[in-house]
Image 1 (spheres, helix red, strand yellow):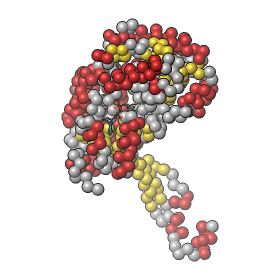
Image 2: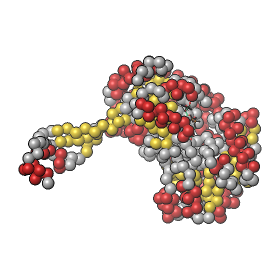
Image 3: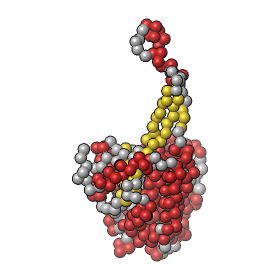
Image 4: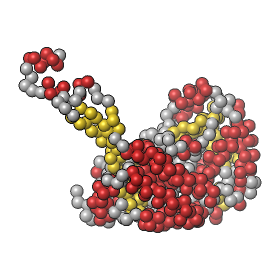
Length: 463
Ligand code: NAD
């Protein structure tokens, strides 16, 4: 195929030519690059990163530190600790029939990779896969979201500062930039974003048989059974839901609660919200804004749809379009066809559904697409096991939320509609690597006894 008319082909070609040089770096060389990224994010550019995210959607500095900067620092420290062992040869056993051989596998770089990232945790979701890609020895082209231009500019500066473009390059641009890049025959494409665009990415990748990692979204259910510690569950859910103002892929999307504890839950929720954000939420410095007017309008439409269907606004509901502000809002009594129960909410609205039996709760979850995350609040082991064994999800956190995404020892990713492939730690390294199987003949092998001609004596041996 002729790619010479593609605007990014020249850059792609340079990275392709350079890929073996990058691939042949040892763990010390790769670690040096990771440490340089760590220093840039933790020291040189820290203030610019905080300012940029504040300017993009008023993200509080503390949230930037916790969810963007420290996540990457943690990922780099983890990779630094284990990279040598990940890169080493991994010996495997030899079956008797292969006597005379030895076998091992190793992780080799995939080659030239593309990372397309979203706007909601723009630094983390660009640099986290980048750390894995560099650890695995690849060259990388990055296309961040056009919706958070301030942080994209800072990321572009960091990349330019640290890398030659024939190793890592960042291209800022709109959707059309992504589409042009997606035509090129990348060895791997790592995409984080919506399931809708995930399908477009996979279709484009299929044309070149590029492998893909799709980190997608969807509705993450939260089950609260009658044995849960309500006060503790509420505290964690209010934090998990309104961190980044609900614009988190693993945020609890809706609550499924035993009907006997719903009222206590809502009462406790009100108290906790006030504790975190005061009664004057709009002036709180502890909650960021909805990204832009498109997302604000989308959320208001959800709210109007719910109201038109006689749902109950239990908490919040007020908004200010000039500030893209919507109060943390809790809604119950939603009919099944309410738009809030159909699509990923990605904002500060939390629907509550009640259930009588756990069967009802898991049947409801299983009637939907497989979630990225499923949360369980319970102190009953049987109930926890029942839910774990009878539902499917990319990740689960029990008696808390979001934290499963920050343990570098755990794989992170969805399943089917919520994604494919895994990221973080070793799993991210593996995703950007080809697992190459190697068998070495050491001395005359048993198998040679069965080479042709197939005499009757040999046939007897095989029998
Ligand atoms: P998005 O899918 O709209 O955009 C993601 C990226 O794809 C952006 O860089 C954008 O420029 C590009 N893009 C958009 N449309 C495109 C097209 N038609 N062709 C090619 N490229 C295109 O997602 P978003 O709004 O930036 O992020 C929100 C979504 O991402 C939510 O669904 C959320 O759940 C999901 N998400 C998932 C994870 C995860 O780790 N699983 C993390 C964060 C966000």
